[in-house]
Image 1 (cartoon, rainbow, N blue to C red):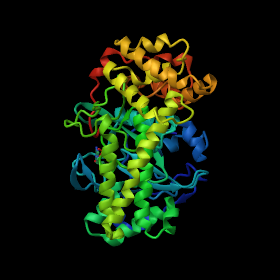
Image 2: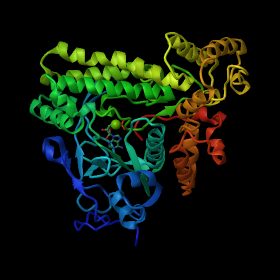
Image 3: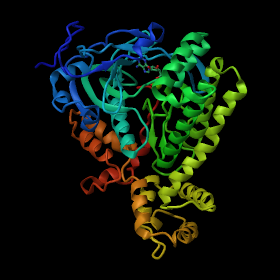
Image 4: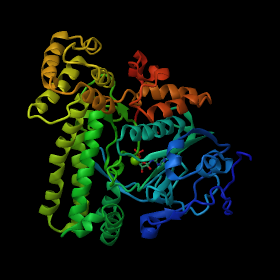
Length: 496
Ligand code: AMP
Ligand code: MG
């Protein structure tokens, strides 16, 4: 089989004869999207494949190895049964209303039936759409590898996320700050609907469509809301709760998203649209990972408030369906209790505390303060802490601090808290709550540099490590090491 472009042939080639499709989003009607074909890329090649996701989706190994699949997932030939479309949405970007955006480069193929329910398949970077504005509809290899690896890494960490099945590349040149090459990420999720979809129909006074969309989301994903007195307020509350849990997960693992615009907020509470994200190296609560974010709007410690701000926008968008502003405000209230509780639960697990005590809040706060004042490596601290015992203290943890005195004071407080804990249970909980591996910028960079030279082995090795981030992987220790000096010079900004 050749890798050559199969330009817009209308004859579907039977690459996966048993893929069973449903097109529930397409059934919402043309107000919600534009039907169109992906634009082909010359001579595609595989960059990375998640066999774990393929298995979950019920796709056969040979399917994800075939030349036809490679062509189809690059947008070069139709997948039988797919109905490609680009959806329209709007959004608040960096706090300002940006109006119509819609998907400028992700083309949805429909949903396939799987053992985990219907999963939408999208090709990100598959060419221009009516919503591309000034963009070229493409994604570069570098950002596609980052999205691919991080989607699967987040899933490995147990954090809700859209998934990524594969990245395919092409030598076609894409112009960014410098010349790069194009790639396509095949990503999946139960739905890619964003807060921005609701804002679009609300603020353009298409309230019939707003209701259609809300009913669709409720019926498919939040059916319990239907049995309440005000289903749309109940939806807002349910989304607030999921978002609160997501923010707790991000904060606990030290994940910075970088572009929490309302068009990047999933209605299902999934991490989505991986761009300039970063896992913290040294702990700095004010860390800004996106070089375009000059005001620090999306700094690490601002994320929970920004999520709430975004939920407020969603609430405003839903108002035409709720009528009563008080009810909408009340629906948002749950965020303020669910987020801190969820964060405390995650931090207690990281500390190895198997039960809750009133003094835990203070312990968690003093831990964050200590890490900030010593700029301690966040992931390494937590992983080393798994070996801390009240009796011996623990040199490897102490060694991370330049201010030994403040560490000793904290260690005393912590030791007192854990004296009555069963050491085996505690260590077990901690090793499951403190990953050894996260996708640090410099680690991703290593995979990207090799991939640019057509060596995709690092991408795939890293993928297998990140899919099991709580395991030791002794052969891949260097992915868990401190960042090298050059890591600080990596600059990552918005869309690439
Ligand atoms: P992002 O910041 O990547 O979430 O993108 C914001 C909006 O711009 C989304 O609607 C994207 O589809 C669109 N966009 C980003 N990059 C491109 C591109 N290269 N070509 C077309 N549209 C793009
Ligand atoms: Mg986006």
